[in-house]
Each structure stands twice: as C-alpha cells, then as structure tokens.
Amino acid sequence: MGKIKSSVEEEPNDSFTSMIDIVFLLLIFFLLQPFKEPEIRLEANLPKNTESAKNTDNTEIPKEDIKIRILPVPSDPNNARFVVDGRPVGMASLGAESRLAGMLVGRSHGDKEWPVAILPDRKVHFGHVLHALDACYRARMGNVKFGYGN
Amino acid sequence: MANKKGRPDPSEASQSSSFDLTPMIDVTFLLIVFFMCVTEIADSSKANLKLPRAQNGLLDDKPVPGRLLINILKDGKIEINARSYTDAELSNTLAEQYAMSKRKNDVMSDKPILIRADTGTKYEDVQKVMQECTNHNLYRISFAALSPEAP
Image (cartoon, rainbow over all chains, first blue to last red):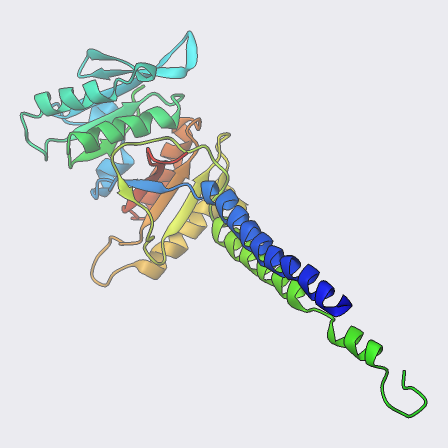
C-alpha cells in the first residue's frame, strides 16, 4: 500500500518540471525579442566626380539643383527648419518631411533624375539630415548630393 | 554497502539510480539558448546608438558581405568594430579598404559602407566621414535608420 502511495505522489513533480522549463524558455525568448530592432538603410551614393565631391560648397552646385537647406533654430538646438530654394517648408519637429517631399515632386516637374542638393548647417543634428533624405526617397528622387549650407 | 551475504543493499541501489540528470540537462539547454540569443543580438560591430527613424528605406536584414560599418557617436567619435578610430586611422583604413576592393581599369570602388550615426550627431561630424570616403574613391554609402516598426 505504501509503495502505491509514493508513486502517486511523484507524478505531479515530473509534469511540473517540464512545464517550468518550457515557460522559462519562452520567457527568455520573448524578453530578448524586443532588443532586435529592425534597421533599414538609405542609400546615398555620392557623386562620382572626384572634383565635385571634394568641393562641396554650395557655390559649386549648379543653379538648377533643388536646394534643401536645413537651418538650426536658435531657440531650440534640437530642432531645425527646412527651406527649399528659399521657400520655408517648416519645422522638422512638426513633421515637415511630407511637405518637403511634396515640394520636391512639384519643383522637379516629375523628373526623378532632377538633381537635389541637401545643404545642412554644420551644427544641425544628423537626424534632420536623414529626414530630408527620407523625403527625397519618398519623392523618388534619384540624384541626391550633400554639401554644407553655410 | 553490501550486506552480510555479499549482495548490494537494495535501498542504496535505489538511491544511486534515482540521481536525476534531467535538471542539469535543462539548465544546460537554457544556458545554450540564452547565449545563442545574446550573441546574435549583441553584434559588436554595432555601437549602442539612438538611430534616427525613417519611413522609406531598404530593410537591412541581409547585409552585403564585406561591408564596412562605421559608427559615429553623438560626440562625433568614430567606432569601427567596437574600437575608436582617430581621423588619421580612419583615413588609413579607408585607403586599405579601397586598395582591397578596387576594380581593374577603374578608379572607383564598389565597397559598400554603412554609416551608423546617432540622431543627435552634428552633421559636420558625419560630413567629415563622407568626405573621407569620397577622398578614397568609396562612393557606395548608406545611412542606417530605424524602421517605423521598431519599438
């Protein structure tokens, strides 16, 4: 009788062990999953003309380029404002990228190979520059170059 | 212990056979799974940066083999493979990369370069690296960003 009792008591231990194992495995898996942040890349194939690549001042850019200037906002160092060919587009913090893309489509007359020059201020945060490049991607502009805006 | 007749004690035999390897195997498996996950996630070539977010771009799930990954920290410091580089060291590295990847009868190189810059990095620090790349005829440059789906 005693032997039968002990075998009955041991059974639940076995089943719990494997369940706890599986729960721990799942816990580890789902705990680590958020750390895998999916990254994307925006290609910026630089101009292949060595001379033009070395001379990146805005004076060297031909007149027909669509010039995107990214200027700092003195009152807010983390912000920037976009200006396209002298026309203000808006603040970066207010989601000006979509308006910027719209302006690029309008000014290029639908020509995807129309040259675009991104001319950020030296002190502007890189995040704003990438947003301008993102807008060029959205407008499907295929000829983008970089320079300094000041 | 054997009893007087030289036979093994049945109670002792049952104890030794009940030594269970299952928990040890479980722990080993857990450790293997943990280290497999951690090594996959902790890519030493990628510095811990706050990348800018972008809506339009190519998902970088299958990186091109042989790509050079340049990290630019918020303060403008350059890191490649978890090691800090001075401007001169970067220039030498890019020159080496160009020499290794240069095509025959062509000045240009197809060496892909991924610049991972913090969203708060000053543009002049990124421009400096871009300029150095073009000085060494390396033109296939991409910028890393976070996809909108990222948490």
